[in-house]
Length: 116
Image (cartoon, rainbow, N blue to C red):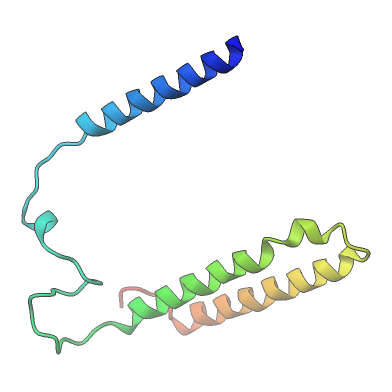
């Protein structure tokens, strides 16, 4: 019982100390940039007919694609316990090769260049 009490005391004490540091440490000096609303890189108070960069959306789509790759590869360690782990390895390798080829294609086409 003594171990549980000491662990709870340490957890509560650490939580209180971290909350106090987080409350008192940041410097509050808001300026115009911090107080202005921000919507996807556009000025929300200006005109709605401004052209936007397609590269911003390309980077967002590439991020979603590689995020999906991680979601597809998460069950891979449990697939090694199947009757044929080589099939699991083949599917995972296929996914990685396809995504790597897509990344190389985007790189060679200049789709990853943010500034021209």
